[in-house]
Image (cartoon, rainbow, N blue to C red):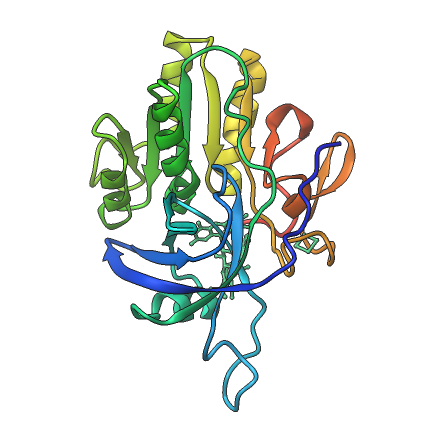
Length: 274
Ligand SMILES: Cc1cc2nc3c(=O)[nH]c(=O)nc-3n(C[C@H](O)[C@H](O)[C@H](O)COP(=O)(O)OP(=O)(O)OC[C@H]3O[C@@H](n4cnc5c(N)ncnc54)[C@H](O)[C@@H]3O)c2cc1C
Ligand code: FES
């Protein structure tokens, strides 16, 4: 079975910029010596200072983040991460400033299989799950393939992330403040009605991914799902990220995080989701 190998080191990248984008943050970082990642891969991030060990600091494990954009920069790579603050780790990262150190391990995991077959690429994102679809859209364009991008967000503040994509992205929201009031899977159903031969790449909350999986199974459409589970190490050592599949339990950090939907009974795993 295809597996990634853990890169041996934790590097300290330099934060190049951080900006608010509606409900999210975009963090730019200069990884001076790291390899270029592939869409769907992720990094384990922590801040170089104030991450734990000192008095009144909670000891943190690093947190997992898909990269959203990457471009070659000198001998390394300039990375952008799209981040939603949901707890202490993401809160600390959102408080970084340009020039601060950002510890990273990566790129990790197996990303999207971009060469997988014919058919127009349909990129389906829910909330912060838009992050890995951004670099995927860019890479497909470089290969001469124009993807159809479908995005669902909770509110208009979250939907500001859609501005990072090409102008043709279709957006719906839970409250109807941008686009129509609908789940993104309604857009997916309409697209598959019009073009059953499309190939689907999706990332989002577990309930959305389960709806995508079920819809694509019904249509016999190939779907690749970028999944989440709690990750303590990111490189196969702790088994904290295991998910049940038709082939037994897999570690999402080394066997995923992108899995072919047909390998899953369900994309709703115990304990998943926020
Ligand atoms: C492969 C991968 C890629 C990711 N990419 C991104 C990204 O691009 N941008 C982004 O903002 N976040 C991303 N995440 C989620 C991010 O790792 C978590 O939100 C983060 O670890 C939360 O840390 P915290 O200390 O702020 O909150 P915590 O206190 O750790 O958690 C806050 C809440 O979120 C839940 N939670 C935390 N982590 C997860 C998880 N992995 N799955 C389900 N529920 C969780 C907890 O149960 C809790 O309810 C990704 C996760 C994975 C596994
Ligand atoms: S996160 Fe430790 S094995 Fe996957």
